[in-house]
Amino acid sequence: MNADVVVIGGGIVGTSIAYHLARLGAGAIVLLEREPLLGTGSTGLCAGGFRHQFSTEINIRLSLESVRMILGFAEELGHPVDLHQDGYLFLLSTPGELAAFRQNVALQNRLGVPAEVVDLDEIARLAPHVSLEGIAGGTYCARDGIGDPSGMTGGYAAGARRLGVEILTGVAATGLSVEGGRVRAVETTEGPIRCGAAVDAAGPHARAVAAWAGVDLPVFPERRHVYTTFPFPEAPRDYLMV
Figure: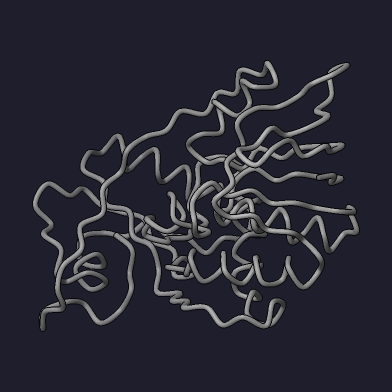
C-alpha cells in the first residue's frame, strides 16, 4: 500500500489531523488505529472538559482557537455533538496557590479570556454541592465547559472519509522505516505502507512511536481516574467542571 501521509492513532487528535490534512489537499492519507473502534483509548475515557484557563500564553492562545473550533464543529462537519458551556471552576487550598492563579487570570484577561478570581461566597453560589472546608478561593471562566470527545472523533472520521481518507481499524503500527532522516514507510500488522510522511498521534504511546524514528519525545503518560455513578436526585443539573 502507498500513501502520502500515514497518521498513527485514531483518537480525536489523529482523526482531526487526518481530516484537516485532507481538507488542505495533502494527498492520499491513511489513518491507523490498532483497536477495533476509533477513540477507545484516552479519548473515549476522558471527562471531556475544555477550558481557557492555562498559565502560559501559548496554551491560552491554543485554547481560544480550540474552543472556537469546538463551538463551530456541528456546523462545519454536519455532525451533532453534545456540548455544555457551563463553566470551569478551579478550587485552591492555599494563599500561595491563589496568588499564582491570580497571575494566571491576569494573563488570561489580557488575551481576551473572561476568567475571574472568585471568593468563597461565589464558589458556594456556583457549586453549592462542594464543601468549602480548606478552600482559600478559586478561579472561574464561564466560557469553559464539557465537550463530546467520542462524538467529535466520529465527526472528524466521517469528514475525513468523505474527503478520501482511508481509515484502517484493527491494524497496528509496529515500526517505521527511516532513510536519509525521513520516514519512508510505516510497518504494520498487515504489512508496510510506503509513505512520504508519518504523523505520531498515538497519545500515551507517542513516545514509543517516536522512538522508532530515533526521536526521544518527552511525552509521559499519567494515569487519571474517573468515577461514574448511577443517576441520583441530588446530582447537579448543570455541567460545571470543578
